[in-house]
Image 1 (cartoon, rainbow, N blue to C red):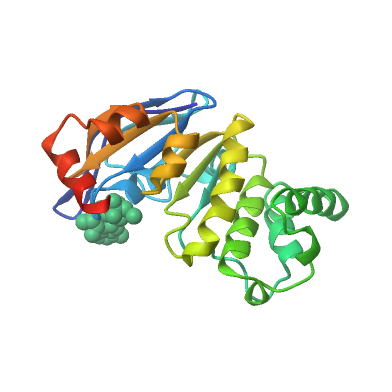
Image 2 (image 1 turned 90 degrees about the vertical axis):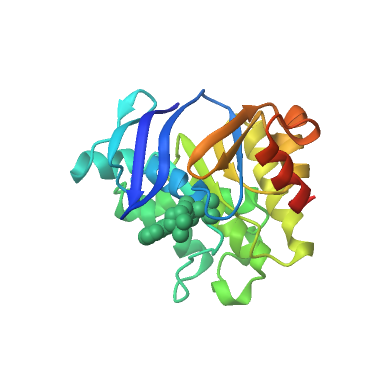
Length: 240
Ligand code: ADP
Ligand code: MG
């Protein structure tokens, strides 16, 4: 579903992604961990070309990501992204937030977009809040809306970049529970998170990144119990 081949990315002289080769099969839940600055966010952002790459190739469901233009917009719509900050439109209701992209990008009729938005908001447990504005919701609720908004585009892949790290602790699980359900339904997911409980519950595979490289790539249980490299042991020692 996601294929990255020999991907290189610099920010000026800083080499942020070093020769990344990564194949993510359909339905896999890939957890990405690593120290701050190791390139996790950049990896996510290149997957939907929010960041251009210097060289290499990225394909989604067998289609190479074009560098720009209409083809890029179409392919980008297949990849949903949820960030640490929820990025909801403050002046729009929850329902309108979820309906916006399907209408603007997919050209859906309002009635179609509304029906789907209502269904998705129910699914993430926010159905009764649809007419409220983002500021009237808790952080956990806003993040669930952000997930519903991404799902409204019927993406083939969902990217989550530290989706719970801005939340108060008591709200973390309500967001992770929605993500676990999504994983169980077979969504292909890339999740940058240090929530180890989630990684063990829902993750099929863990990548450990350090200095722009994939240093370990394995199953969650072995990674968290017996990491192979000193860098991973050092990192886990700091977050555990
Ligand atoms: P992580 O998500 O693992 O913390 P990032 O992918 O955000 O790491 O960043 C990797 C490196 O690239 C860091 O050194 C960061 O400072 C740098 N970086 C990220 N975005 C930019 C940017 N837009 N311009 C310049 N440097 C950046
Ligand atoms: Mg980051």
